[in-house]
Length: 127
Image 1 (tube, rainbow, N blue to C red):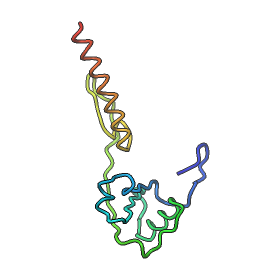
Image 2: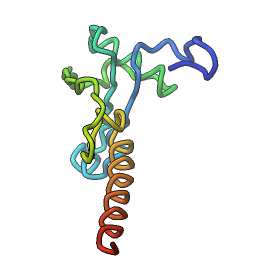
Image 3: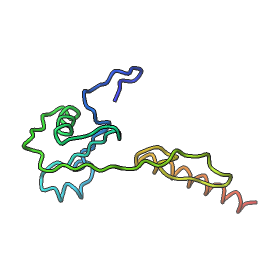
Image 4: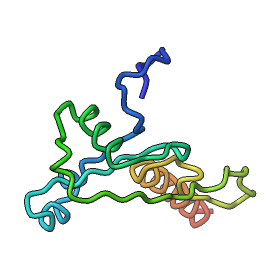
């Protein structure tokens, strides 16, 4: 994470993002029995240990996360979609390869595409 207009990092964290999953998803909070579930995201080149994730979470949250409070740790490798090729005529593509990463981007892009397609269908019906 960098300050806009600079290449100076705002934190010393090697994580590129943190999600407080139990704050974001009530269904998970209900199952977590009062514990907090955090998800940290890293670039594929970072080898992450439990200690790295704990110190990064402390840095990003601005509160100490004691080592004794970490009861589980796991890493998951996600494959990114291939770079997107320009769409063929009359084909609408939806998803991360077009919209960018994150569910909010994909939902926004899918909604906009659906609105365009519906408008085209209405034009065809009126012709």
